[in-house]
Length: 124
Image (tube, rainbow, N blue to C red; front, side, top):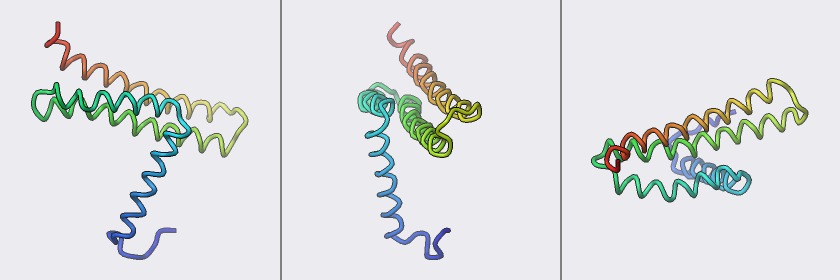
């Protein structure tokens, strides 16, 4: 049940920040895909900021990479909830997990397309 206090209370903001950091730590600790994509982000983020010409190109190179991490965490959350609720196989549970995985895949395709369309013409 939501609290009735002031939503902009600095203590509440600090708690929200800590919960977010807990989520990032859990993703790093328990999800190999998240670790791999985080390492890729550590490389691609500064490269995208360096090679992008202007703010729009920089955003078009960096944003999809960060979105991959976000959706990977959501996918992992879906998988954790599905496994908690129903550890045995169920068609709908499998579908939910597959759809989460597909969302990550589509964002990875977006990363490749963004980088290819922006940097491809410069290099080829």
